[in-house]
Image (cartoon, rainbow, N blue to C red; front, side):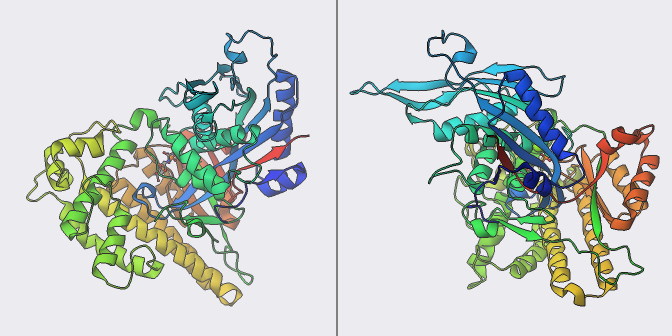
Length: 562
Ligand code: NG1
Ligand code: MG
């Protein structure tokens, strides 16, 4: 799973469906999309891009602190069918859809209307030979969570990366979108949209071929930058999971020293304990069940008091901690919590090295951080739960008020009077450690293979569940990204027999993920559907839309039609 791997393009659709999993009728979805495309645009699609949503097993809100996380792609995905549109040479170019690189975007869902837009080049005529030189592009992307903004965000990145310099015009494109990832659910429909859009525009413009073709790592990087254009200062977990995932496996994704700088370290497979061959009286392996709290988590609305505020609290906390620990930090550097421990080790434990630190050494250091973060409680503070005021926070950063605003506040809008640096840090370091403990349990069980006892497997599953439960407690108490509905649903899931249950994704609504004994999935779903009040009266498809088992699925890919 290296970042240099090419993005798979299928020409045999049966091979493709085989790789996607069996919980949705993929063949029907793909052929329906292709037929509908032909009906609407009068030609077959040239390419269909697929990008899956993801579920995060453990490691919440630590990707932007550059700590490793354990997500897996799910079967539910976004598909974008597309084809070049011929624009007659003689046609008047005043109309938007005749402009170079113009897009007609439709969505299979009837509630979404047709969108027509065209990017405008920022061009400057070159001196001698009259060639036009394109310096960049204008494409209006309102910071609202509407589907077409994600399509535009993907396109914009492709334009900026591949269509600047001597004029090379992007081709006009018709496209049709469909999706099965519920929006606002914490299953990353947004990243799936951005990845699918970026992939579609790369494919249609021939950027997935040739010597300098975009590979998986490039697609992750572009998609991360593209998603930021819609207004959330996210880490890279969702885009990496959507692109890099492989069937049947969870991914351990690390972002340090950088996701794409260390392609081999970036994403590694971690297998959940498999059913034990001699597990007569034991429930066998475990399955992931996603359950939507039915509270929609709208990041556009909650960013100022939620996601973006947490990013600020986490980054400022890291600088303050670096200072109290005597770790070097540049005057304008936005150091992260991962870099703080890296440097702490490199600068104090000679020989261990910060970047190349082994996972065991990292686990040791993380365990020591619980005491260290106590120093982030503002001295003598009487504020509830150790929140620092803006003034106190500026003082802790060691920057002048002006510098502080420039470095930490100029790129983001937040709405808060107190900033809970201590509680956020406590979550980040304990969660980073739980991820590594979870990973170790999985790797140790896999290494023991058939020689492990059935009891050993079961014990491992219970411990994995325990770590998920602890993660939920930390998200709710210290990171404050849960909500009543998520607290209730995770508790009901445990009562219904899950090994463990927690919120997944940013929180404040959206989905939970539960680790459930394979043999008990049906009865688990039934019990939760009877006890979680918002599920009252739901059955059949309506119920399986909100609570469903999923297996780790494959990452982004495409299909070419001939
Ligand atoms: P969601 O809300 O599930 O898309 C967000 C971030 C992730 C990560 C998680 C919390 C985006 C695109 N993604 O996920 O990078 O920080 O929250 O762990 O904002
Ligand atoms: Mg999202």
